Length: 56
Image (tube, rainbow, N blue to C red; front, top):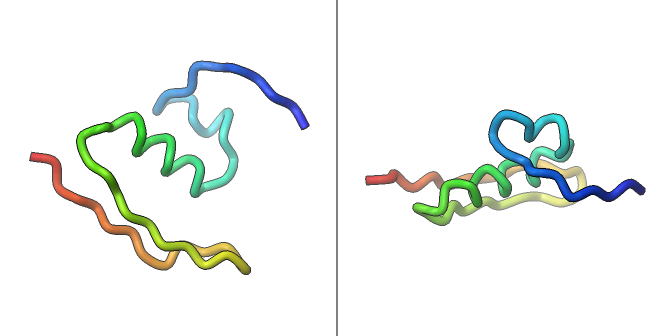
């Protein structure tokens, strides 16, 4: 297992993070204006629902 401390942003997120649910969490954290809601099923891993709030 490799570990690194790198600056990750919208442009290079695919280079550093491979799991889709971690990508969405990181991209949501970059935009601190709202809190999204996601529901996942674990085995097999699948997104069941995602609620997107509108930024005003």
